[in-house]
Length: 384
Image 1 (spheres, rainbow, N blue to C red):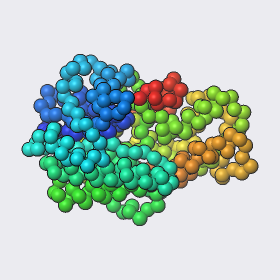
Image 2: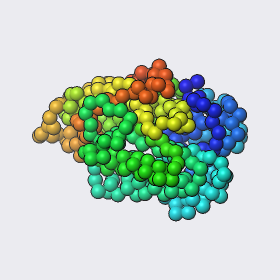
Image 3: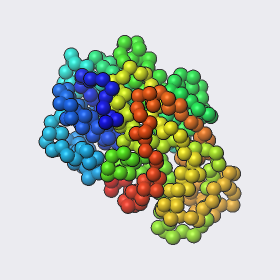
Image 4: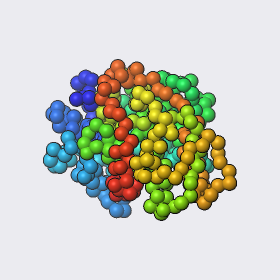
C-alpha cells in the first residue's frame, strides 16, 4: 500500500489540526497503519473543547464520520478510540508544555505533525494579524514545547510559501526570502519554515517541512470526492453556484490571465505521502501534482459542472461593471485575483517520485469533485 512507511517505525505521534481536511485524513491513515501492523506506540491529538462539543465528542464525530474512508470504517470504534489519547488544549496555550508532559512519555521519541493553522488569503492588516497570531506565534509555542522532548517536528506548510515565482522550482525554498508574496498567509508560512529549521538545528532535533499545493477532495479512497472544506477552488465556484440559484441574468466578465495555472492535489494523496515520508531523513518535499492545471481550464470545467454559462474570461480587468460583476469583484476577486492572474509556477516532483510512485496520483476529476460540492449546496457545515 502506498501509505506504508518506508522503514520500520518506532515512537509516538502527536497531530495538531485533526479537525481540518488534511489532519483528519492523517488520523485515518495512521490508525489504519497502526492497527494493520500491531504498532505499540500511542497516537496523540491536540484538541480543544467548544461550547457545542467536548474534545472527546469532536474526535468521535471525526472517527464515526459518514464520509470516513471505507478502509477505516471496517475497524470497530472502541478499538480505534483506544489508540488515541487527547491532549485537551490548543497550540497557543501558555501551559502547553505542561499538558504535553502530563500525557506523553518523556523518555520516548515523539513525532509532532503540525497541521493546525488559519488559512486566510486576504491581503489586509486584519488577515496579517490573524496569521501572525494563529500561525506564527502558535507554531512557535508548539515548537518550543516539542523541543523539550526527543522529537522530530514535521510542519505541514504550503507549496505557495515561495511567493510569486515563475517557471519550475524544486523543494529548496532558501532563496525565496526576499520574494513578493500574494498575501500574509504565504509569507507567514515561509517565516515558520525558517523558524522550524533554525530552532531544530539549534537544539539538534530532526525536522521536516512538507508542502501540499491546493488540496481537493479524495481521489483514491472511496467514498470518492469527499472534502470537509469548501474553500480555494470550491469557494470561488460557490459564488457562481449561488448566482445560478438566484437566476441572476448578468453576464460576468472574469479577469483571469490566459496562461496562469493552479497546482491541485487530492487530500488522500497528501495524507498518504505524509505517512510515507515523515520518518524519512529528508528536510523538505513539495507534495504537488506532476503538472499544474490551467486556471481557465480548471474553473471553466467547474462552471460547466454547475451549469453556469453566462460568463467570459478576459485578460484585462473590465470597466463599466454590471451589478453581478460589482459583487464578484468586491467579494471574490480580492481573494483569488493573485492566483488567477499571477501564478505560472510548476513544481519539480522528481524528489517526491523517488519515494512515492507517481502512478498513485489519479487524474483530478473536476466534474465529480464539483458534483460532490453541489450535492451539499457548497455548504461545508453539512459535510464537516
